[in-house]
Image (cartoon, rainbow, N blue to C red; front, top):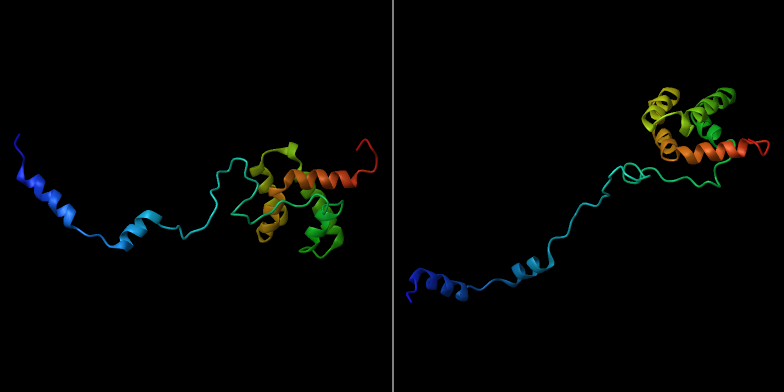
Length: 141
């Protein structure tokens, strides 16, 4: 059996080498991530933009909830009521997809109210059905 002298030299250097304890600790612990965030997949996520919008409480939504929300940026009560009716008709889940609904809401409410629009879109069915339920006068409605 013939041994190569180069291999034995490498092994001897490895044995004589001393590593610092800091390197061992860092390698054993790993490196902590400094950025916090949420992975958004778009599938089954109700929150948009890392929690910018929250789910609304169904008990807080009454027949005039939408009108009160709109009256925050529309001074006239009659205009606010008409706009609330238009927005409610737009929120109807049977009227189309979310992108179409978003475009209609932006046209109705303008770009300045985009946070309100995002909240409406995130809670589209919840707002629509709660307001319709509270507006119902008879059992059939």
